[in-house]
Length: 362
Ligand SMILES: *Cc1c(COP(=O)(O)O)cnc(C)c1O
Image (tube, rainbow, N blue to C red; front, side, top):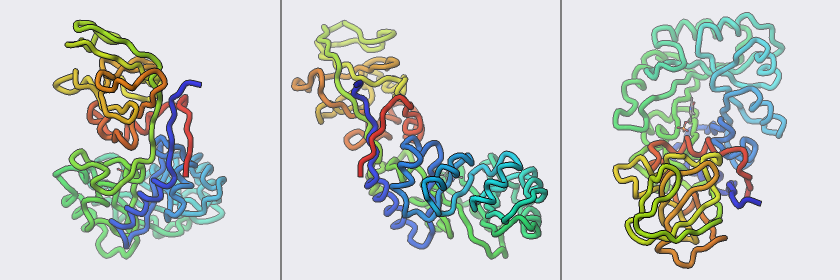
């Protein structure tokens, strides 16, 4: 069998949830498990995070899968429902829905449901993605309060700049002003807010990326927050080439050896989810992306192919065909590969391809 493997650690998930509790000890934690648990497998991560107070997903199918697997916690649909039929499922499964638009509000008012549903009323605090404008928020709340299909209401917003120097002060103030006098549970904080803005922890926090052991911010590592990587993406060396100075590597000759170089070929490519441009976006593309072979750090060479990539074995003479490779995980933070690819750890984790076998360990 092709040696690539994604190993998912339930223990690391439990550890990272404990880190959330440490940072936000007075808040309930709604674990965000959208995008197939950020690429780790929805049900896998739900088992690792079974101590969470709730789960947040996008599609109703994910909520059904969680209930089928026996999870009784609150489950929030982060984009709400897309049709009136979905509202019946929400009602019978006891789900929690975001209401972010007039259309969703009207749909809820018009529905005939067996049981009222739990609602997160979302305010647009400046991200200008989903949610009611601050000046429309109170009116939306009044309509929900009067609606027979509503069991209870939580107030929420989502910050666009919790992860950078801009911070959250302005949108947080907007939210506080728009919700003044409403004595209801509040949900505001993604991972960056949990780690950097304790004043906005509120009643519920919504951690995503930190649960998977990656950093939500560019200027601090996951390890510096005490987080542990959940996924280890590994493979093996399947070929070795000894090349002379002046020889090139891979499609487009994007790496030229300046000295005799021992090149390892790894069974992992962009069809596995490894970014094609890894290592080629920095000012010095010869530096590559970090990778570990036989337990030693080295770097990728040239352009990533569909099924394979290249790495430098010149300083790892013991490495040969069959040597273990870590693409990311314990030795190589996914965030370091992301930085060498001009993206974020979120994107790499979510993009791990279905053809990569996944192994769950405790
Ligand atoms: C994805 C998402 C989160 C989690 O964000 P992280 O940065 O991964 O912690 C929280 N809230 C909402 C509304 C989201 O869409």
